[in-house]
Length: 183
Ligand SMILES: CC(C)(COP(=O)(O)OP(=O)(O)OC[C@H]1O[C@@H](n2cnc3c(N)ncnc32)[C@H](O)[C@@H]1OP(=O)(O)O)[C@@H](O)C(=O)NCCC(=O)NCCS
Image 1: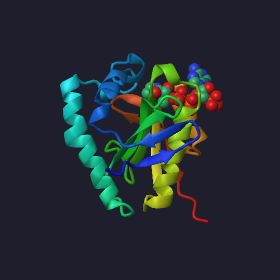
Image 2: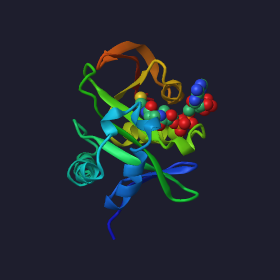
Image 3: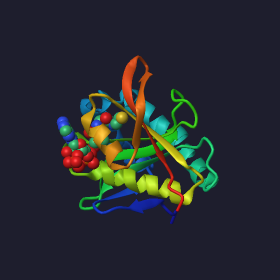
C-alpha cells in the first residue's frame, strides 16, 4: 500500500489529499465563509478534479521528492478531524509571488462548522515545525486582511512577528514573518 504522508497533532491529522477527497474538498470550497476570504478557491467540480490530479497531487509529489532541499515547491495538506476522520480544511505553504523574496508563505482554511476550536492553530504550528525541522526553509511569511481577526490570531499564535502592512490585489493585509530559530 502507498505510504501516505501524515503529521499527527492533538485533535487533528494533517495528511496528503488524494482523489477520494474530491467531494469533501469541493464542498468546502462552496462555503462563502471560506471563499469570501479566498476567492481563488472558487471552481466547478470538474475544475477542482483537474486541479487535484494535475496540479495539487503532482506538486505535493515534487515537494516530497525535493525534501530537504526545497526551492519553489509547494505543499498542501488536508486537516482531518481525528474523532470522525472528516476532512475539514487545509493548510499549506508555497511561494507567494505578490510578496518580495524570500516569499514563501503559509496559508489555511477550515470549514465554518469547526472554527474557534484551535484546529487551524494546531495545523499551522505542526506544518511550520515540519518545514523548519525537515527542510532547508528558514523563513516564512503570512498575510491576513486587517479585518480577518481569526486569521491574524492564528498567525500570531504561531509566533509570527508583524513587519508592517502590504497591499495585494488592491487590498491591505497585515504582513508577518517567522524565522527558523537556530539553537
Ligand atoms: C482563519 C481560519 C482558518 C481560523 O480557523 P480556526 O480553526 O477557527 O482558528 P483557531 O481556532 O485555531 O484560532 C482562531 C482564533 O481566533 C479567535 N477568533 C475567532 N473569531 C474571532 C473574532 N471575531 N474576534 C476575536 N477573536 C476571534 C478565536 O477565539 C481563536 O483565538 P484563541 O485561540 O485565542 O481563542 C478560519 O476562520 C477560516 O477558514 N477563515 C476563512 C479562510 C481564511 O481566512 N484563511 C486565511 C486567509 S489569510
